[in-house]
Image (cartoon, rainbow, N blue to C red):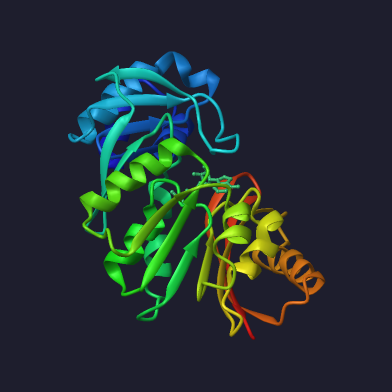
Length: 283
Ligand SMILES: C[S@@+](CC[C@H](N)C(=O)[O-])C[C@H]1O[C@@H](n2cnc3c(N)ncnc32)[C@H](O)[C@@H]1O
């Protein structure tokens, strides 16, 4: 597919520009989101047309004009070509996600990670997802493993509205429970000591919420899946850097724990990485 895109653009862009383009777009349902530099902006429509020719399912092309930011982790999108819309239906591992890309966070680049977590779940577990968005992790887990309940918290009312719809679309009403609230408050007031496993997919700020994650866990112990962004120079290991920071924090919280696994989920910029750690809490 990408080869085709390069062929379509070969006489319009320089080879290094082509290389950049082929790595800098995502397809979510029938919407392509391109992230291109200001210098390539003048080629917006040509690039969008080539993407639509290469990926026949794409009906809309938008350009991401700001980084993901704010409490709701949103990005500003500018319409480029096709149907003017930001809502789409995305399919992943047999699940359907309805999402408005202008009003909720969603990334198809986390699909492997979502399935990796689903494969860890033991039958009958209670899971608490502190930052659920439109329900992407919770729904993949509910469909591909056998948890008892997944309490799925998010502070963004629009994300919760889509999560409710996605729960119905995927027919998992009994297992995924949407909760619109700040996760710290929800855990303190309603969900202390309930979970066998806590998910923390808010890499910018998960560190601040580690105390709440511990509070949510069953006193017999359990698991935390912790996400972070980490900077690492050439000779540095982003996983080790994350492990050191998290371990320091968990020691200050008097936790008895073991980091059993870590990996780079994706590269997010020059020398920047998204890292996940699987942490086992003992009782
Ligand atoms: C990076 S997104 C991840 C969403 C989802 N897990 C996914 O991967 O598609 C983080 C989510 O956390 C939510 N969020 C941010 N701060 C929060 C808080 N204090 N309590 C609950 N949700 C929060 C945002 O609204 C956003 O939907």
